[in-house]
Image (cartoon, rainbow over all chains, first blue to last red; front, side, top):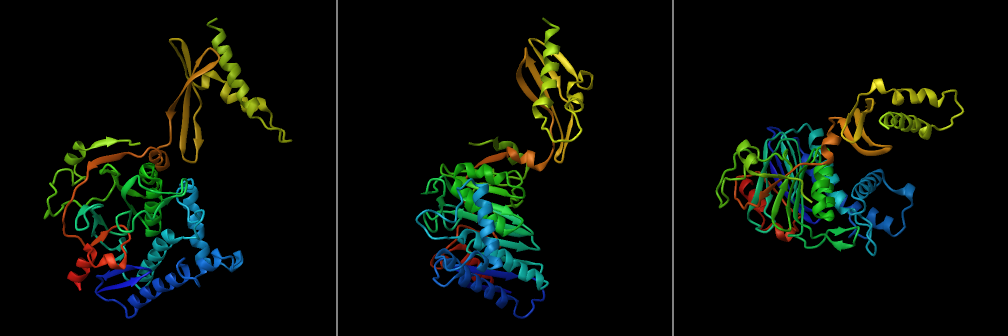
Length: 270
Length: 136
């Protein structure tokens, strides 16, 4: 079954390939995401996040879910030495970057708890998969109708951060300036909570974020820097046989083959 | 003069536990702690050129075994080299290897597309919208 709904300001595409799909499971999933939007959106005056930001909620009135989200935000702020910060000076509390990955990962858990084992959930470009292999294309940072690589993911998550859709919305918390060091940053991780937060945090860090993300346990990285150079980790699950219908030559694409690996420069970039 | 070097090394090695010793009120003495570090026959020493290299004893950590070799020039530490270090993901990941490639533009048959968060308006023209329409 397939279903697409617009929640939290972006399209969410659900595809379930299990032979039997219990009644109401998709309703429960989209219901959860709408609940998240009500509770955690900084753009809704009545949300928990807005009320906390205005000082209307005390520390012991914060829900366990919001406490978990804020805990994750703090974890990534510390890990990036402040580049990733949901409390930027002059701006309201905005935990969106963590809320998205966290809530969609929990939505995937709803599917698993319902006994489903073969699905692909895409929330505004961030993907959680189960029971693959699923072929996950990574959008080319400059050509909206092209891909720059194709990944093969069985059980895991893929998240991409970039400026091409919403402009300079990711700010380096250390400088207060928009992050411009990278064109796009894609992270493959066991959960979307980690993949989305790491992709956003690394994008905020700029070029040094590539190495930072690559050093995170369980993370594989595909980054395009401002000079249009691709930097990726050797363990990135690049799909083995690209079905070429475009203008990209086969060379240098099947990164997992020894032939291609031998031709690619191995570097420790800046 | 040649004999002065091992004496200096032993003096330096012997001093380390004294510096690190924290009075705890217990009965353990710094002399006990000094024993492994100060015993030259438990570590291999080789003299080459101007410096003298002394291999320390192996330290067991929860990440694995660590052993360093310190080269002295006179009473000065000239260099420290890792003889043994943990083969642990955390160590391996400390300096991640990255592969540099040329940016490709391709079209391929995929199940889904990862990209920067698209707005609901932008979705209409997106690859994901085409995939959703195709499969519906």
